[in-house]
Amino acid sequence: MQRLFRKRIVLGVGGGIAAYKSAELVRRLRDQGAEVRVVMTRAGCEFITPLTLQALSGHPVGLDLLDPAAEAAMGHIELARWADLVLIAPATADLMARLAQGVANDLLTTLVLATDAPVALAPAMNQAMWRDPATQANAQLLEQRGMRLFGPGVGSQACGDTGAGRMLEAEELAQRAADCFQAGLLDGVRVLITAGPTREAIDPVRYITNHSSGKMGFALAEAAAEAGAQVTLVCGPVHLPTPQRVQRIDVSSARDMLAACEAAMPCELLIAAAAVADYRPQVVASHKLKKDPTREDGLLLQLVRNPDILATLAGRSDRPFSVGFAAETENLLDYASRKLRDKNLDLIVANDVANPNIGFNSEDNAITVIDRQLQPTAFAQTSKGKIARQLIAFIADRLQRA
Ligand code: C5P
Image (cartoon, protein in one colour):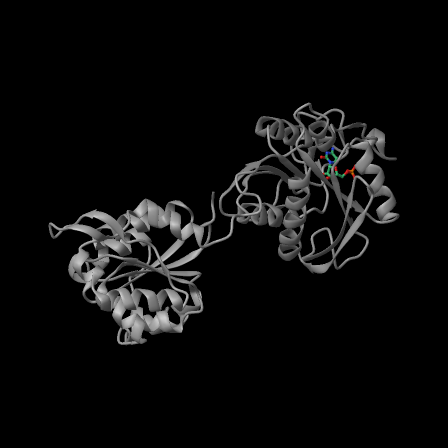
């Protein structure tokens, strides 16, 4: 569904009347989450203005090979490296001939030579030009070298002829571009993730909380969205930017978090990475508590249990595939296995928060995932971003088999 999410596409625009469809194509690619940089040939600029494509892509259009300003920003080699896909639409007969010969006499042909990314061409020309043996031979040669041809389509042409040579429509080209990338591991799966600490009020200015930074939950939300999931991230108070394409809901207390999660149900996958406070003050004072001279020896704060968000959601009749975290300082695997059973989970991710290099508030993590058969799978210490991607791939695999 979101195979173009965050994919980097260089759209090359050649000089053909079909260039008017390229404007629509930029929109369609961006609708699917792709980042688009447009490069135009000189002839392309005769059919559609760079300004139009700059406005639609949100970036300056590449025009000249020898452009000091572009070389300072994103020159041809940088663009060639940046691209996940180079899509040339329209690809004229002349452009295809130059590509077949390896000519590098403008920005677009040069970057095609320089890139390691896949290159796709959407031929667009008069039907007689397309049928011409020279063009056919060029098309064959380019395909043999690994370039993909999208079309051309058959039908009426701007010049009045009818036949093969029409550029495919923008919608279809965007679909073909998406087909160049593998489907996401969690395409279309609804994922609910809890992250960060909760804050339990004592009075209007004081509260009980913990050291959770939310980094692991946010990294998981980002990795799940990258894998094509529809992610809702319910988080306690944290100082982190919202990952792209993630719906974020900010909450404060455990009870708020539970209410937000219940409102976000149903979902297929729940990952509870939040460090939820187990207890909250029984009474929240409506005014700031004053020092009491009659209580010089101390103050007793009565706490009551918070609801267990994970166990509540994993206990529902429409329960999602449920993944919990167990942050422990001792008997890690033993305690984690018990939690898996007690909370009716599919997987539990155990991490040793006694180790200062991993876990709470640190950049790295090292984890062991335990399944219902109590089989452990260890993931070695690395950044939370990398661990998150590995974990999402592991969970996606288990979810598929469930
Ligand atoms: O029981 P413990 O707090 O160690 O369990 C940890 C797991 O349970 C984590 O996945 C955490 O997000 C979840 N949890 C919860 N609601 C609570 C307590 C823990 O969702 N009240």
